[in-house]
Length: 280
Ligand SMILES: [Zn+2]
Image (tube, rainbow, N blue to C red; front, top):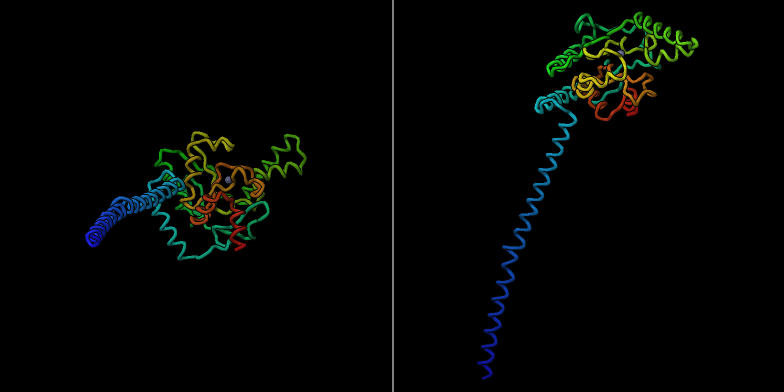
């Protein structure tokens, strides 16, 4: 009796173990773990796809309207050429020359000029850049127009004196007239227009040099795209204390592609940028 009972009991236990082990192993393989792993793998791959989509669209935003492939090509060309020629800028490069109320151009400063269009002249080393920028803007159906580029110091003196006269006519003292004139027209020898690297560009449909210039389609395009050609909007609205010049939504300055990109992306002005690279 005891043996029969024992053997039945053992058979029952074995049967239970078999059933239990098949129950335990099934969900572990087919239901829970595999799908979990698959779904988490999917989630991971989705999130990485998503983040690469986001970063691609961010890039699109920063490089704006132009065709993706062409703008990234510009970037890689620029990077390869910039990186091979110079590792880091020191601020002494010809295209980073600083002319502002506190920095006169060196005595005997000379620049080789070439005509861009309609008699307007520019430093020949950056002439192609400004020509290409104007060409591309016109391809977009816009009508940018240069109204000033290189100016001799003599011409600058004339403009400066005219500006002083405007304030004198308004009843300002000589000293105040000079201080205020310098906010609009650079003191001769401190103007970027003397460098041959700056141009005032307006919309054909709106040629006034005032704040409303920023509302023209031409300025909107130029402000957004000028960095691709190595240009910056030199006198931004919120940097007047640093540049010493009133907001000028028409004055573009060539600083080289690499610097222009950084200045644009980080919303710096040239003075801030130069300060940083000199500290490095
Ligand atoms: Zn200007």
